[in-house]
Length: 411
Image (cartoon, rainbow, N blue to C red; front, side, top):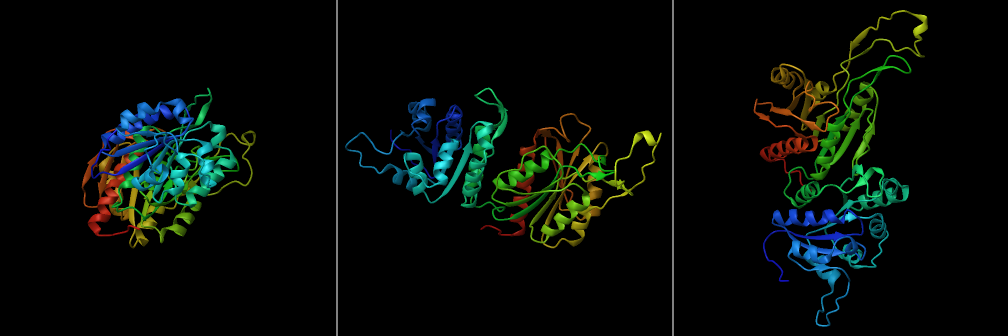
């Protein structure tokens, strides 16, 4: 099949042996829709799940399945020619076996040989059983490859092919395409920036077993951290208690109280270019915390005296120099009025306000409906969308901010 010529970027897609290979066909279609050139290389097992013919038709290029051609007139050294042609290599699905072989420098097929010969960016979209993805041997391989500069797209939770439910599903093709586009956007003004993010709720102890807190789960802060990482930023995430798993490639610090969060924020603030305060810090805390457990049998009632808690974001606004500050406001009424007041009182550059009284927005939901306001009063009223999409819009504002400021923070 004749190779298509254009000025767009070239993607080599590696397809390993996993049931998620069926998603690779849609991934090729979406990449072509974006105007990208695609060549597919498949492992022997990958070709058992989806045919090379399907990938060839969708990519408008030959799909490669072996190091060597059966055509005697074909003198192409495939793993070298593909490595020279590619601007980016994406392996989706990436099995535990392929990731292990690459981590240990093995080159026993076309895919692993091409990776070893390639000098550019390599992205893994893993797919495997949850027991495999949580295996410490696999985790060590991932950590090693991350240190070498490889990129990973986090897996998703759901029903797995084996019948289990858990982590391990390959990210959906739309998310992979978004990740690829950001990696190819070498002019991103966020590349190389250091972004500090807080997430989830804090807990203020009443006694050893009880505390004051709120309904925040950390989903918005984690989405921001993931999206910032996908833009090429170095991310530090400080989170209160949450059921969410740490995100690959992000430095995560776990805390409980507002005071602990403040200590970590201030320890990382001066070295940061951006501080996004997405955590729901408890506004009040008990004046006295009981050392043991309060026994209900010993009293019929109890008066709990509270005092105002520390305001981490306001303190950051008072000491900021180069940093861009973004705050969040969870409101139930007078959203815009309250948000504008916080911009001024806390010396913010942007504030993101949402109505937490909505069932589809705010604490614990996968979606958010927000209004973004900057310090000049400019507003963007976003429709209901996923929290990752909200994060992308916020980071788009940041990119524009740095471009307008002439920051030039690219590596």
